Length: 193
Picture 1 (cartoon, rainbow, N blue to C red):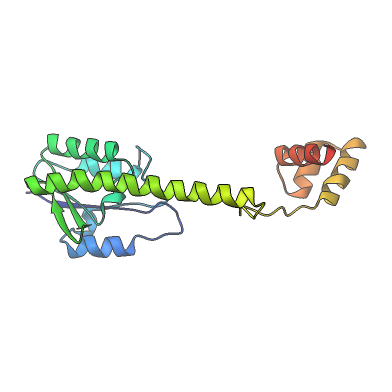
Picture 2 (cartoon, rainbow, N blue to C red):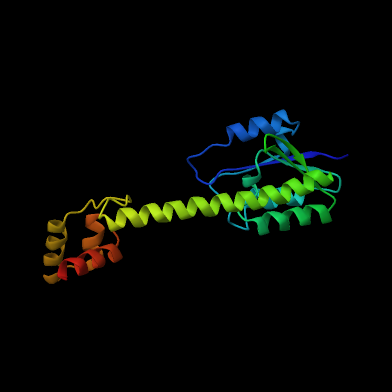
């Protein structure tokens, strides 16, 4: 008996897959045939639930995903996965691809998958380029680049240096300050210059 096997993924632990799961269940995927990766980047080749799901697929089954980018971030990776599925006699169905359903069991579906995989990769490249450009512009203006704020003042680091000069172990001073030794060394070096 052939089955619909669903796969959902989010890149960070703070995101949820509720919308994807609802779409997959509405498409006919049973809850126990649904595999979900939480906090796993699409650029990684190894994803625990994706790997389990691929092992569960049998000839005649159909892998169902809500959107193409849930499978991966590169055209090469997605096309390789598509070829692997095809070689195993498994179809791929993408629910929200260009406003409709795309099923690779049809010639049009195969062509659409290839085109959309290329577009998904291009979209990621453009987004990455925009982020890098924005960071470069803010850096050139001396603007805030975000990131974690320094929570330990320079004065506290100077006090730590005094303790270390007096013979207190660096590891102990760092532990008492609640920072790593490498961070303490880096901050002390920055103050010394």
